[in-house]
Image (cartoon, rainbow, N blue to C red; front, side, top):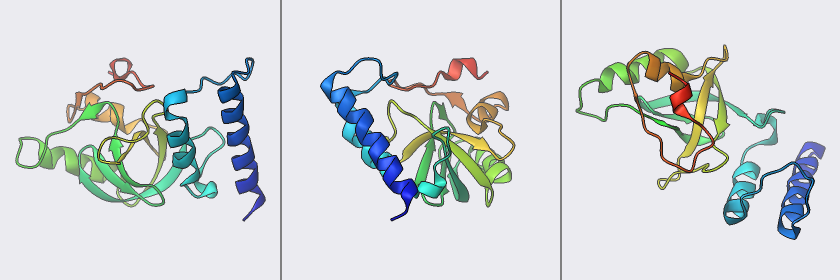
Length: 162
């Protein structure tokens, strides 16, 4: 185990203990209901993938459709707050091809939804940023490949992206 791992674990545990004990002044909004889920979710990533701002970096190695990709070290990622056509629906191939052109075999940066990091299919819910910093979720909406699909709870507001 390296020192970065221990520092990360101690820091996270300190935040959670403070939250459970009701200590004020920590500047953290702790979701008591999902606290253990967040801890295991964060610790499941290689510490080298976690950026100082809390985002996670990986390489997109497979595109399932216009709103679902596979990312190295993370697994299946569902673009939060957007919905693209499903297989056999008009626009499916276009949205999938658009996502392929933007991120397949490229580095992506994931801002994982703090309020709901996983969906019912155990996919990581995230805003996907391209290497140039562009929000791919927003780009799908702006280019007409996706529609807003806002399902609370979520820390993101897709209505500000368009």
